[in-house]
Image (cartoon, rainbow, N blue to C red; front, top):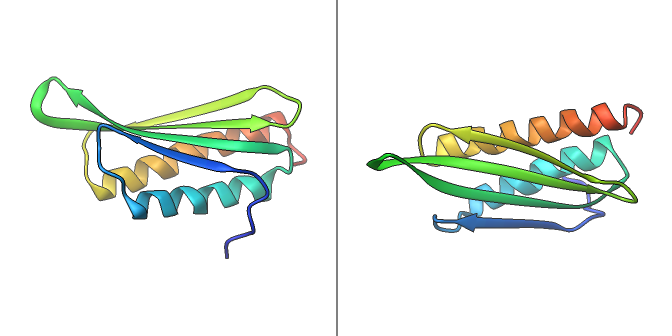
Length: 110
């Protein structure tokens, strides 16, 4: 079940085409963040393709920036060694898992 978001979410794609599935997954994962901490004021997600030396090889990088009300920015990142939808979904989840761990570390009680 998705919660009504109380903070803005921005999803940006770099060096790869927009993916509605990836954006939807980011919204689902941001909903998990919201349920863990009420102090989040906004969330930015950057999904990028990076060349990995060989012409046909790309890596997917996902960075999640979480802004907390009256506090500093928390950043979490994950990188997949290959591109494609399964790798992108796993990488998005991994980045949000790391962001969630950092939020819980900072605010154990939410």
